Image 1 (cartoon, one colour):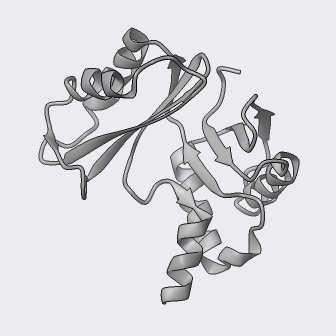
Image 2: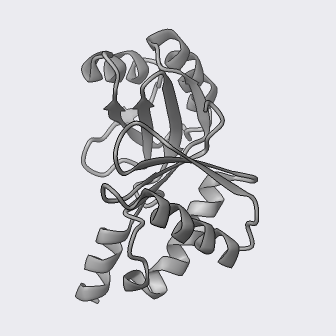
Length: 177
């Protein structure tokens, strides 16, 4: 399934419940058409929805923040803006398409999560970071170049640190506040 724009994680064995919970979340946000596919990795789902996945995740985060304990199966939701073959040249081409969207004064960092791939994380970071003529900031970047590799596919996004929904982090935040 090269057609995905969401990566959703859950605990092993809860994939079906997580997909259903995500569909309910989507419906509450006015998104009707959401499809999911299990991967060979326990707890990892690929999703496809119509519309902007980043907008969906931002709206979902707002809803989840109101009641973070109301979600039992979703652990993380990562929006994906580009999908390509998981090989260095294809990843670099996708990054080039997104790099111009980073404002000139912004800082960035590259985050790579890989599953089922022989690609080297350091090589991916080195090759993609060299394409972005912006200041690197590993602690508090303005923009995160998120690269998610799952077997033969790579999902790539430009995100802020807040654009990945982590239920655990939202629950911790609610306890602090």
